[in-house]
Length: 331
Image (cartoon, rainbow, N blue to C red; front, top):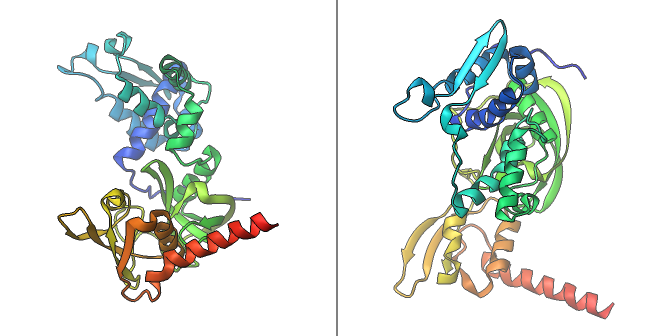
């Protein structure tokens, strides 16, 4: 399938995007001194201008008082690049257990950057750290991050950079349904332990945020997209309610306080006994049903608003689950 050339109007990158790229690019260049800039750019899916912009940031990495021996050295000559670490990189790095675990938990995000070498110095360093801590890095990744394949992330980033559309086979957790959607990706980012793609969705005729590990398949279309973000992209919540989404009011027992931290909601009242009354926007009924089923007696729908039947939603779901167990035991 033929793709159009890279657009001359590059999309702005966030500081987080640039940091993730550099954490993969810098070790690879150090391991391949004198590599051609065009080769690095091709490997990491960048234009040469974007690569040079990123590398110019590396000049500023160092420690006070920022003398030459405390700064990372970047040399770009005759279309080639060398990076030399500052002296402080040679000193043994002492990490606390919490710091080491945090680094390992984010390792899948670093190694998922297109062009990362799974056998390179970054991967080897993370493996050594995992060994020193007695941790299986695969287990950490499985728990902390959505299982987004590097190839799928690359395809989505490519579509975002080229402003082209793709078709995805997507499972919607909130609606508990699978569908094929045609989307125009704008940005791929990681947040709260998972990868997401922000895009225009033709089915919804609006912007949507899709979780990458729920994409079962992706097909390139090669079609250019005329749909761009209405405003500058931010790193806000992955859930973006719409004006016509219904709102319910829940009373949460103290043991269910985690809901306030885990999901977008407004705390209306907190009683002396620890019960919290919150208002939540509900984009999909199956999502609310699962939440109520999960919380059980720790939650009560005190105001169902325009969502008729919300008070009985959790109880009805529990009865259906019970019937399934009963039917399977009789089989």
